[in-house]
Length: 156
Image (tube, rainbow, N blue to C red; front, side, top):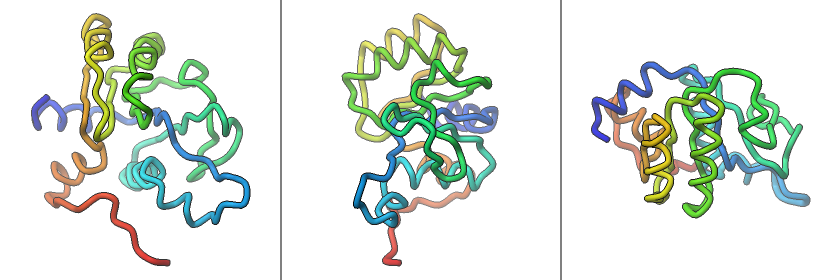
């Protein structure tokens, strides 16, 4: 997938289902939650106008970055443009099938995640497939012309 395709995806998309957003663990410092990669990416994309729906079966009903967590992408009640995945590669074929079922246009596997079966499923079900790329980094590169190190974390 080249930069022109990715730019088109990001320009034409409004809603992202983010699979694997972290919830707060009991006894965990709430500041840690803000530093988890999926949560950093979620907040960033929200700041640039995307509606991001957090998906985490263990945090259903919790509120993360102002959005209520849904347990499964199949339970989202609004149209989704991109299913963005922060889960192990082996889980992505099943996620690809669900992404197609809900009418998503894109299956986006975050940096370090790739699966040939998920790619085949995506292609067979007319989903655009992006893998091993951070949606936040790609947005920054294409629209802000910056190349930051990820994640950018400051001591608070």
